[in-house]
Amino acid sequence: MAIADALVPQLVPKYRVVYDRAAYDITLDYTAQLVPAPSETDAVWADALLRERGLME
Image (cartoon, rainbow, N blue to C red; front, top):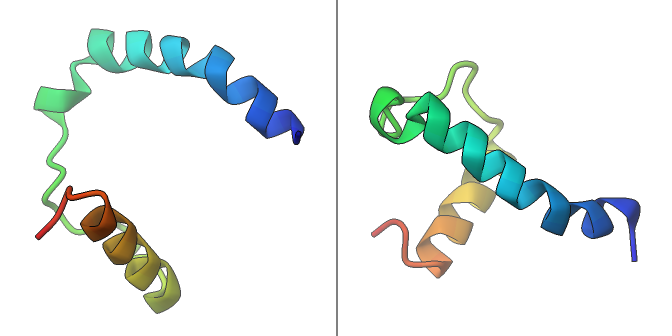
């Protein structure tokens, strides 16, 4: 198991606390274009991942 894999379960609760306290769900525009824009490879990967998980149509 990679070190990062071992740390993820410990970091998720901490991430959620920061996310909730900062109110990112209402302060960030998740529909806006990324700046800087991702590479074409990264954009294709992200699109496929979101569609696979039902988070984008």
